[in-house]
Amino acid sequence: MDAVIDNLPTFLEGFGNTLALLGLAGVGALLLGVIVAALRISPVASFRGFATVYTEIIRNTPLTLVLFFCAVLLPYLNYQPGYFTLAAIGLTVYTSPFIAEALRSGVNGVHVGQAEAARSIGLTFGQTLSFIVMPQAVRMVIPPLINVLIALTKNTSVAGAFFVFELFGAARKVTNVRGDEVLAILLAVAAFYLLITVSLGFIAARVEKKVAVLR
Image 1: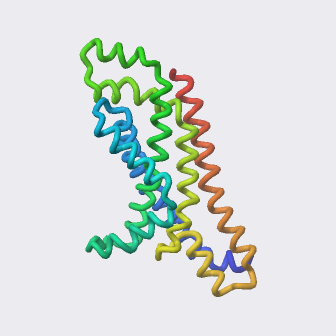
Image 2: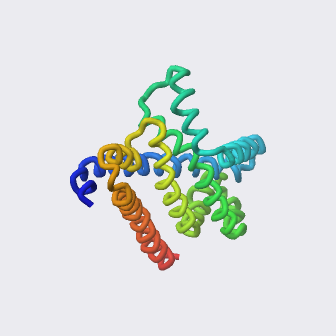
Image 3: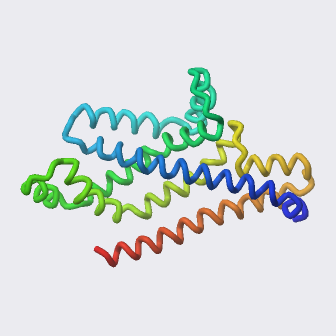
């Protein structure tokens, strides 16, 4: 464990970057996922078609390919905000269809009579979705949403292959110096990831219990 203790600042830097990626991509994916989910159930056929194509293409594309596009092709197109930002964009895009599908399943779980009642009193599609349907849908899909965020946490490790210094980047750097303690280094990285995922699971349980009472 000496390698871990002696290089703790390096691990903490990687851990901080992993949390930053999770936060930025998580918020971005939630916002984009809500938009895509709304388009999937839109009464406008062209919107539904666009959202369906977007979801199927991104969801069936490997994350490595998405990050490669962001890290290589976007700079080639003269968009160069830095590899960290590009990785956050790639993770946001890749995660958003999974968020959208989770939300869509929640929307489908809301009784159709509530939407009909909203329309009968003059609410538009956007108002019905925003004030009636989506709040109930989110309550129903908190566990799937947390599972998507946990998957996103693990997916941040792929960003290390595209010049982003995160937890695995920290592990690689320390291993190059202390190759005799690879097992301890990997266990330390696993502990950091568990700290995030277990915390997310705990938050999900608390939130789910709270909204269950509010129903």
